[in-house]
Length: 185
Image (cartoon, one colour):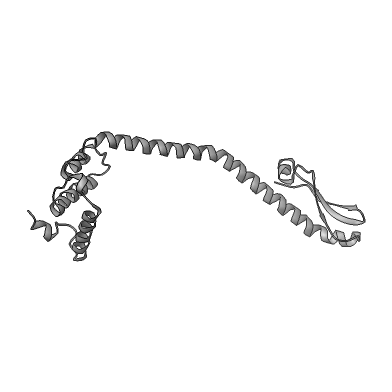
């Protein structure tokens, strides 16, 4: 945006650099029409020498006000979209929990293997490899802990399972069943 030229004006014995504020920037300057900066001198010649520097300062304020104005307008336009995005996310989460409740209703006393099988059948798997990995991990978990009812599975079971896997993988064997699991009934 190009700004109007500045002028020197004298008020109460001092010289000021003055510029008309563009209409679209006036709200940032409390709807004033003019922006003025003092040269700090009563000498017209000295004031003329300071005019360029003070004009640059005024234009910098205009640039900042224009940038703030653009950012505010962009934020005003984006805010409703962000609110809608947040609302959509909440709706999706509620729908996911509703579907999970329906899929696993009555599984409180079911065995882990039954729940894992039901999850394997009802979950929307994007990749076959992920489905296979889940199936293998579920089978290995059952071999390691036994086929416990869901309500009896504790954090310690998962911790011990993870510990066993990490020790096994530290030995460089991450593609086959750990030896302790092969020996289990």
